[in-house]
Image (cartoon, rainbow, N blue to C red; front, side):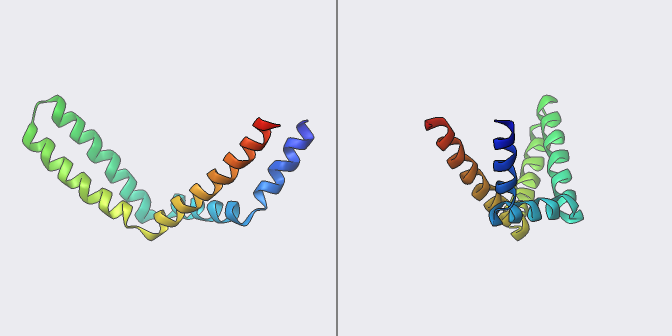
Length: 104
């Protein structure tokens, strides 16, 4: 059984969709601009939460506006779009395999 699982794992890793996902995952993890954007989003979320906790609604709204700007930049980034598309493709493949095993 374990050998079968290892064989399936090896074949999955050879699929073009998986290779593309791995390529974009590496690019995203190494891209300084994307990592800076992700850090900015995390930072502004924490600041926003703290402003709300301190009942500073004006500052909270400022942070929320900035967060929307970062989210727009995030959503419009072609590398991230390709990453998420390839991730969805791989998820569909895994879900299909899962269904086959579930029904057998």
